[in-house]
Length: 145
Image 1 (cartoon, one colour):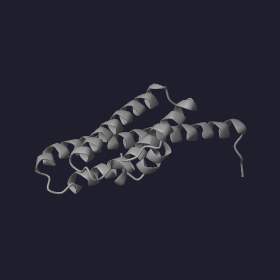
Image 2: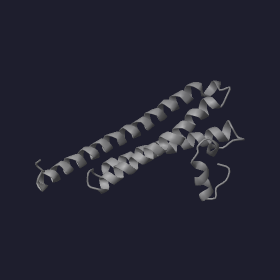
Image 3: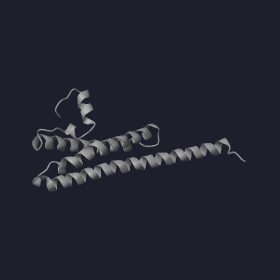
Image 4: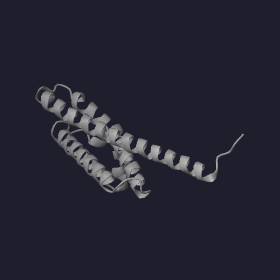
């Protein structure tokens, strides 16, 4: 059985690393795009049903899913893009623009969530529906948000 020489083996490792980097790049942007599109869809949904709300769950359940699952996924995608940039596989604009897009989306959802809970559901807080907000608020000693 013939074994490949070191130059051929090195070339295959480089090709494999490029494929992994490309796949990670594409999957990260798909994750961020899905988060942004789902957030825009939620915003349109909230505008459409916001005036005729009989139960707050119609607004809080999608917000909970977006902030509890989609936002951490987008954050992990930004970290993956940053790692690829650190390793030299990407230019800096990719993780920087991903961070900006995801950050604006998360801040917008937080702003709406804070407004929603302050005006329509004053006996509850946003940290009741977003699993990771409780530990974050406790680490900064913030109460009642």
